[in-house]
Structures are given as C-alpha cells and as structure tokens.
Amino acid sequence: MTIVAQDSTVTDSKADRNNFFLIDYQDMLTEKDYFLNKDSLVKGLAEDFFTLRMSYTKTALYSPYSIDESDRAKAIVSELNKENYQNAVDSAVKALEYDYTNSNIHLYLGYAYRMLGDSVRSNYHYACERGLIESIKLSGDGVSYQTAFVVTSTSEEYRFLRYFNLAAKEQSLEYFDKYSFDVQTVVDDEGNEYDYYFNITIPLTYLNNKFK
Image (cartoon, rainbow, N blue to C red):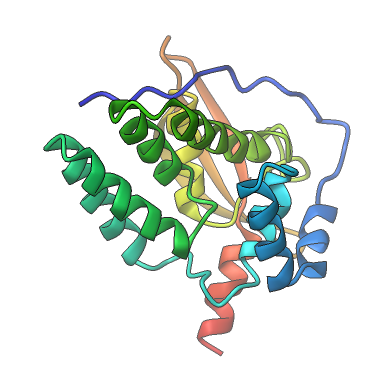
C-alpha cells in the first residue's frame, strides 16, 4: 500500500513578524469553538483549520501525549494493508470522533474512500488533510522563535514533516521568553539540511498542568 499526499515546498517567509499572538488567540477559544468549527467544516459552510486545531486543545478530548492516537492509527493502517477498506473507513470515522484535527486519519479516509469508489468523500478528506497541514505552514515560516510553526502536539510536527517529504535528523527542546520550542534539524530529498522551529507551548503547558 502506498499513500501519497499532495506535496509542496515549505516556502512562505514571514520572518518580519512575531506570531506569539497566536498562542494568546488559543487562550481566547473554548470547547464550543471546536464543535462549531467542526460542524461548519462537515457541512461545507466554512473552513478555518487553524481555529479548529487551536480550539480542539480546549476540549476534554485533547490529550497530546496519549498513546491511544497511535494505536488507532495502526489499526486503520492494518485494515488498509489487508485491503479491508470498509473496515478502515469505520475505524477512521471513529478515530475522528476523538480528534477531527488529525491529518493522518483524514489521509487514510481519503485513500480508503477512493479505493471504495467514493470520490466525493475521498476528496473531502484529502482536502481536510491538506487544510490542516497548510494551517500549520501559514502560522509562521519556522526559521526563528518568533515565527515558529505553531503546533498542538509533537505528532503534528512529524505529520507536517512527512507531508513535505522532510526527514527528521535531530531534535532539541529550547526555550525563549515564556515559550517552548522543538527545533528540528531536517533533511530534504536533495540532502539539504534545515533547522525548523516548532512552537510547542500549547502541548507542554497541557503536560505541565497535568502534573500540578
């Protein structure tokens, strides 16, 4: 089984701006915003993937360091590998009930629906995958603390890197002001190395609060 997402290059320079206000924006959101945005997306009324992702962190469903996410994904991939596409759909739909912001699950659903001949649902979930990843890309340019890509989990980092065909080589945890960052040294298809900054303040704040 080969699943290939639409690819593009991470080139969207915003080095002259400070995007720390995006963390403040997340503070303003509520659980209600997540379900309103999700409902709007499903009905085809509006797409705001960044707000969807940020507001998801305000729900009781949000658990960025849970192993359940990985287990659900593995179960779906297992069904895809066995070409049990309807089973994969059923499992993926249930997984989205826990987290509609998981771009991998949308990718799997897009693929499963395509294999079942349902182009409408397939295109929808491929578009969701693309929109979720693009909302990370549009949050910054990843070249500095001030313009780091804003993520809600470390899992989002790796989904982002895979989408753009970037291999993670090294990772370090760094701090600037009151914010936390993963600095990923990545390698592209041509062997070029880059350092990309990911603002992980949101998931680390969640983790710290769990241990208070």
